[in-house]
Structures are given as structure tokens and as C-alpha cells.
Length: 72
Image 1 (tube, one colour):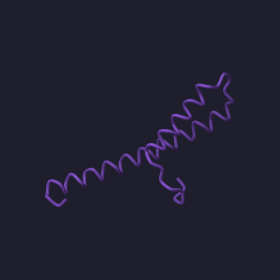
Image 2: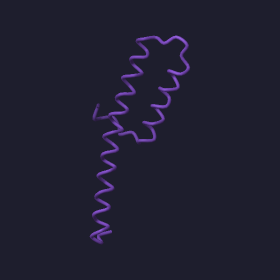
Image 3: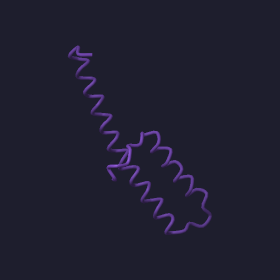
């Protein structure tokens, strides 16, 4: 992933994945090269989303620990 790119929110990534899915559903005849690019884009979005989900999970754990210690 290009580090100069801003991180997308999970909502943005899901919207883009939905748009890719809809693109495939609209195709009567799929251009293999175009489909491959869409698949690559989808894979990248899924990878980025998994990383972001892990970050969010870690943030929740930090909040949970601080809450149980009475630090909030």
C-alpha cells in the first residue's frame, strides 16, 4: 500500500467493495482484463480493511483496559 495515501474508513472501503460487486452483477459479458483489475482492487480493499479492523480492535482493548483501571 502506498503510504502517502490517506487511510480510508471502513465505511468507504465497504462502499467501494459494494461498487465492485455491483459492477460484476451488471456485466453481461465480462472483460477478463477489466475483471482482473476489479478483483485486484477488491483484494487490496479487503487487506486494508483487515488491517484497519485490527487497529480498531486494539483501540477498543486500550479503552477497555483504561476503563477497568478507572483511567477514563
